[in-house]
Length: 332
Image (cartoon, rainbow, N blue to C red; front, side, top):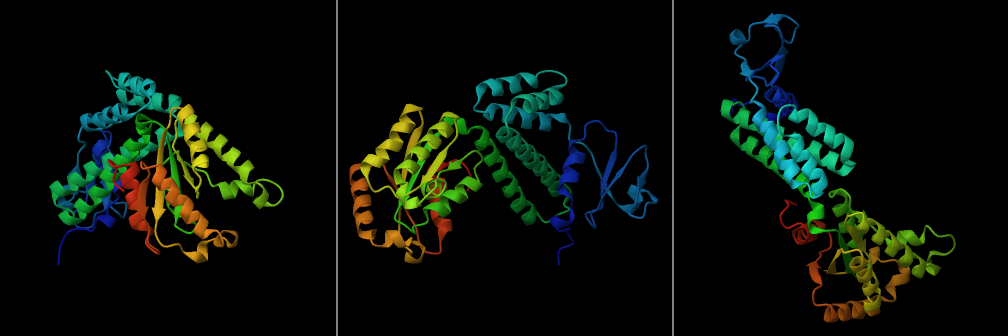
């Protein structure tokens, strides 16, 4: 049986904080037998019972700060990744000379929006916790395999955060997620939205319900609203995903025109797979054959359209394909 401490017993955030402490105002120790951490000051450390303890006698490991260079590199990498170069340049200038950490945070809190602030918190935490994992590996406190798995999680979180602040580098995108009723369009769109800050999902059927009266009478009105929402969000520099069956070329061209007018990229995707009839609205059942012919026509006339295969009960593989298409350099 391994005598290593399970990673779950260690407060990784506290360990990261100790390693990042460059002021030397406190003393930090970790008990390699239990994973418990202790903080002291003025040469005095208290044990779990509140009694003064001798760390060396207890066999505790001293946790010493790794210096400011590692934290500086985190700010440097983040600033370089920000697609808004006005903000990125301000952040890069902020970290020149003494007081870099304070100036960097001041610029973020006064000039960055919530998307960038959230990405910074995620990125900083992931990088500092990765340094804590490295320390645990050197000190041989936790099993190396468990540390490796935890490190992958932090690396992926850091990569996603950089992708969020760099999303404008590829320009805003209008993603038309097309397919038969019941093929999983809304499921994939919602999952993509939940994992990508700033993405707007436009559900035309939902918009119909915003309008008084019978939703069946508001198809054209909902299209106008969908196009207006898409235009506004794309102009703001954010991606828009439209999970909607569009079996007519002229309707696709309306979305394409909006994207072109605001300088956004259009990504067309058609989901292929068995239709789950239980998920198909009653009013659509009798038109399934017509819809299939319409989609076939779309694919014939728009060869740039991407195809993703969906399988009933397996949205994960289709989602991975979608992420590979839209974010090929970011872990899914």
